[in-house]
Image (cartoon, rainbow, N blue to C red):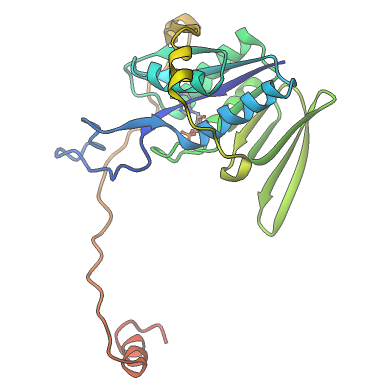
Length: 249
Ligand code: AMP
C-alpha cells in the first residue's frame, strides 16, 4: 500500500513574524523555515504504517519554491522513501495545491493520502478537504487515531462533546490533528542517508494544472497592541475596578 503525505514549508512556529514595511505580507527574509507541524505528524503516521508492515511506500509531496527540497529532505530523514517537489515561484493558494496533489494522486494511485489539518502560515484548513472533493475520495479530518484494517481506514476524531470514529473505504484522505502522535527527531545520520533518497522535481505545467491565484488579500495588519496591565493592592480594589472600569460585573 502506497501512502502519500503532503508537506508544506512554513515559517518555523517559534518565529515571531513581522509585517513587511510595505504592509504587503509577512517578512520572511532571513526567517527560519520548517515543516508545518501538522505535516510532521502526518509523515510520522505514514512512516509508522510502513514500519508496522501496513504500508509499503511513503511518498512525500510538496508544492512551492526550490527551498522546499530541504523540507522534503527532513521528511525523508524521518523515514519517507521518496519525495516529489512541484516547483513553483508563484503564490500557491489551497485550491491550486489541492489540484496539484490530485494530479499527483491520479499518477501515483496511493491508498491513503495524509495532509496536516492546517498550515500554520495561512491557517486555511482547506487543502485536504478540497483535494478529497476534487478526487471524489472519502475524507476524515482532524484524526487523533488512524488504523488500517481490511481495506478500510478507521479514524478517531475529536468532535464537540466527545469522540467520533469513522470507517472509510480506501483510497481515502485523512488530515492529522495534534494528538495523533509525537513525531520523531531527525538525526544527523538519517539526514545524511536522506540525501541519497530519490527527490523528483516537476512543474505545475507537467501536471497540466493552472495555479493562478483566485483570492486577493486586500490588507495585512498587526493585531491591536494590548495596553499594559495594572497591579491592584487588594481584592476590594480588584472588584471595584472590574465593576467600574472593565464593566464585567
Ligand atoms: P491549509 O489548507 O493551507 O491550512 O493546509 C492544510 C494541509 O495541506 C497542510 O498541512 C499540508 O499537509 C497541505 N498543504 C498545504 N499547502 C501545501 C503545499 N504548498 N505543499 C504541500 N502540501 C501543502
